[in-house]
Image (tube, rainbow, N blue to C red; front, side, top):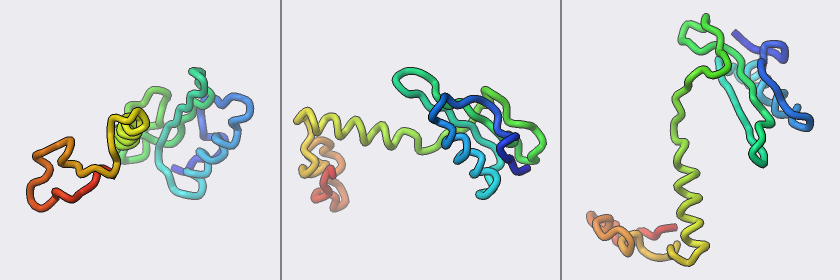
Length: 115
């Protein structure tokens, strides 16, 4: 099931219409089967969209609130936490990882830097 502009459900705030267009393009041009996206700006939801199907067979429609597995979502948060520590002077990006995690030095990794 491909989605075009009429198959995309939800809302976008004024000025965020290009997000709806890009989201619809994921289906029309890139073959997306089912997805949702929500974007908040200054604590306010400005994008809340969903489209496509939620099952392997492509028969059950994606609905508002459909649960989804998210993978690799914490890498950016972990990087931001490390950079915040660096900004505060509590983490040296040029230090060996072993300076903070001694067990990491095993198996020849003693020269690996935090960066």
